[in-house]
Figure (cartoon, one colour):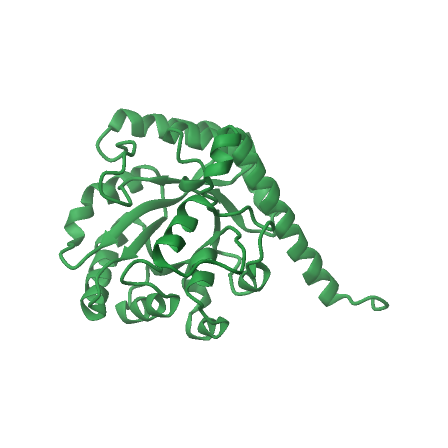
Amino acid sequence: MEAEWKRQDASIAHGGYLLSLAYLTVPDVSPVVSVELAAAAGFDCVGLRLLPAIPGESIYPLISDRRLRNEVRAALSDTGVRIGDLELIRLGADSSPDDFAGFFECAQSLDARNVTVIGDDPDEGRLTANFAALCERAAPYGLNMNLEAIPWTALDRIESAARVVDNARQANAGILLDAFHFSRTGADFEVFGQIDPMRMHVFQICDAPLRFDAEPAAIRREARTRRLLPGDGELPLKKLLEHIPASALISVEVPNDQLILQFSPLSRAKQVMSATSRFLASCDARASAAKHPPGQP
């Protein structure tokens, strides 16, 4: 119980948002160690990967290895850390919701709520139907299915993700907004007028320079190996945060090969938390200044 209260106090200190240590920030450790790192660095939650993002990717077999899963459950209980989001379900043209039954069962056993979904079908009508069916299949497990728009996938823009979510008409359909992908696709802030804020379940935060190599392979390489700590780049993070409801989870995803080479996993987790805390504190200070200009009570 003491650990749980510590996690709650941490969220209060960050503007009321729950903060999650994303899988790709510390991809070089086991799921149990990920939970322990999240706790040591002061995160409320942790993100884990249950299915590979690319063919041949090596991940820990949480779905099939019940002993490992029980070890993760024990670590969550001991630390008070919760599961932030689970990765990832890739919906292709031939995908069926039944393909992910093991994923759903594992997610439920870990008391997870948010699952990241990638839309990799160029036929938006078929993708929408499959996504709706996926949401229906996941609902009994208490899971939100959150679409993430990624520049190198078929569902490459936040506008498209919002359209699929709306047309799916499922209560547990949501959006994961990634600050990096939003910037690199040239998305306009006007898109938020088309999105129900309560569908924004997860905000994935990092930083990056405004200028970038627009070649697709270069964008993918930057996304996977060169993201910056929040506040160390030029992305419009504060403006993005204005569109994120307090109910959303903030997942701090900073895959950076140089940080992996130079620092231990614990050091990285603490650096990420420190940078994110400074960023959120600066947002709170700006909001307070706007409400109470100098010379006014």
